Image 1 (cartoon, rainbow, N blue to C red):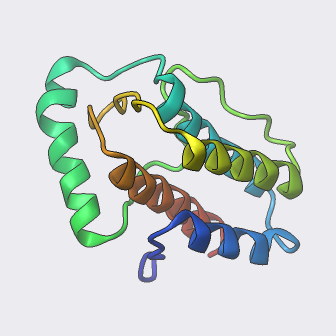
Image 2: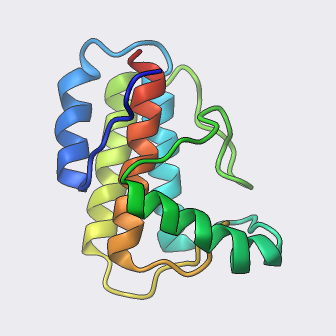
Image 3: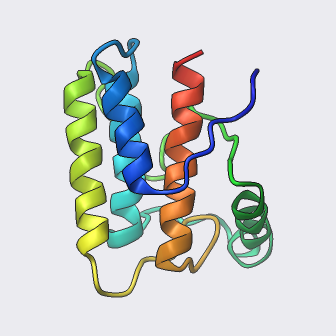
Length: 144
């Protein structure tokens, strides 16, 4: 596996996603919709939080590590806990549209954010960074 993709903003992510969408491999639409689901959960709440020790101790340490190194690696086949996975047949255009809508909603959001299912409370800036890293890891897995 090569060096991980390092993107730092939603704008940079969308630029990259739109650039590859026309020649995207199978599963691209579903992966982008999955990333949109995670962004939406940071606004609406994650339905299935991890156990308290994870949210209070382990999760914040993992988040700090990801933010420091500028990338994440995770199981890209795992769904957002408690959220049904998107349809695998979703087209790239449909997945990108869902991601764009979730990002626009996140950017416009002025209120409190929901705690992450594993990291616990996360600031808006840190949420953007971790959502971008999450999507970049999916891009790495798809665009080998």
